[in-house]
Structure formats: structure tokens, C-alpha cells
Amino acid sequence: MTEYSSDNHHRHPVISTGWLVTIIMLLIVFVDQFVKFYVKTHFYMGESVEVFPWFQIKFIENNGMAFGMELFNKYILTFGRIAAVVFFIWFITKAIEIKNLGIGFFIACAMITAGAAGNIFDCIFYGEIFNNPFPPEHAVLFPAGGGYAGWFEGRVVDMLYFPFFSFTWPSWIPWIGGKEYEFFQYIFNIADASICVGVALLIIFFSSDCSKAFNTIFNHTEEKSEN
Image (cartoon, rainbow, N blue to C red; front, side, top):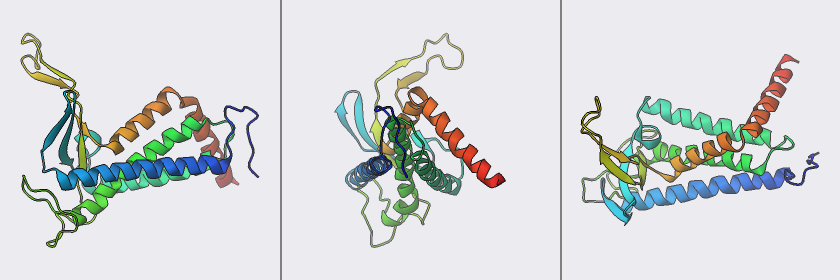
């Protein structure tokens, strides 16, 4: 039997919260993959289109983590993402049963889960379903000659580029003097943005909800295992 909070602000039936989380995750994954498919098949590698002076669509790919970082082996990254998505889905299903958690907490969790899932599709499938032609040719979906890599070896597609401003460091500064600095130089995708926004929401607005959910879920799990 589902219990409800006496506080109207936090009152939410389990089924509606579950559906909201599901819809948010599916929507983010769909938009992320739609944009990636479009960029992959309509841009050549390195092509850039200026939307505003401070915003460009620039097609690049990377083998690593968010914002092009490469810290771990490709397979470790892919299976790590899969494990993270499975954990978050399990965590959300458990947290839905807890009273007095704000709906924003679940939205943030859904954004993180969907973001991780969005990049998983690139890693698992893109190597098999896309080719990798030389510029200025565009990639083809399901090419006759096969894809550019095997399963779980695909590269993540990035395209969102915000070069807000740049400047040259004064020459008197050690190590970086005379070098040009650009903010914001990273190129990312919708899945990356979803993860970052979700994490920021949890830290800034829903840290108490997050602590309560973790304590309730894992203390309850430990009690079950002890019994």
C-alpha cells in the first residue's frame, strides 16, 4: 500500500512519479540520439556551423568520458556506464517508496540516468551501424561495407560548443604566460549536459533528499542482509 506525505508540497503517488521519471528519461535519450544521428549523417568530422557568435554546432567524436576526457580503457568506460545506469534505475525504484522526497530530486536522478544511457548507445552501437568516411563526406547509417568498429567500440558524438570568449595570458605569468585561453573550450552533447545539470541539482537543491534516500535504502538493505 502506498503511503503519502501529509505535506502537499511533497505529496506524489508512486505511479505518477514513476511515469514522470520514465518519460523524462525517454525524452532525454530520444532527443540526444536524434541530434547525434542528425549531426553524424549531415556533418563531416570537424565541420562547424555558427548559430550565434557564442554558440556553434561542431562535430567531433571521442573515446572517453564527458567533455572528451580519456581516463580509462574503452571497455571499462562502456561497462561502467551500463553499471551506473542499472544502479540508478534500481536506486530510483527504491527511492520512490520513500516518503517526503521532493519531485525535483527524482527529476535530477532521471536526468543523470538518461545522460549516462544516452552515451551508452554511442559506445555499443555506433561502431557497427555507422561508417567513418574522410571529410567532407558524411557518415552513412548501415553502410554496405560495415561499420568503423565492433560492438562496444563506438565513439561518442559531441557537437555543442560554446566559445564565450578568449584571451591571451600575460607573458609574466609562469608556465601559462603568452598562451591563449578560451572559455568554454569543451565540446559536449545533450547526454553530457543532462548529467551535469542533474548532478548540480542534486548538490545545490536536493542534497538532503539524496542523503535521506541513500540512508533509508542502504540501511534497510543492510538490515535485511543481517536478518
